[in-house]
Amino acid sequence: VTGLTSRHVAERFQRSNDTISRYFKKMLFIFSDQPFYSTHVQFPDNESVHPKIRHNPKFWPYFRNAIGTIDGCHIPVSPPAIICSNYRNRK
Image (spheres, rainbow, N blue to C red):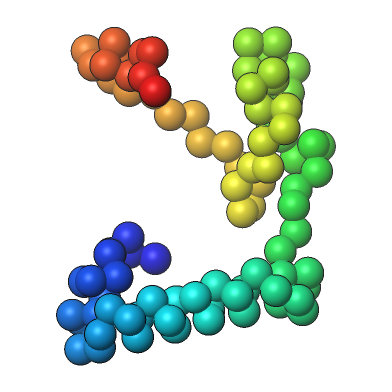
């Protein structure tokens, strides 16, 4: 959740990297397997896409197959104009 590396988590909980990795994999399999996944994970339908995005030909080709966020909202994000050129044509 906090974006820490497994090394930092291992240091925080005083466990080896192998132990942290092993239990992370166990939790990943629990959350991605049945019945948890089918019970608690629901994909939003295309109707949950905001009309501003859905009816704009500039945005819709890029968001047509997007799954969306957990609660179905989209947050408009753009870099400040002064550094906008840094984010164009990036790999």
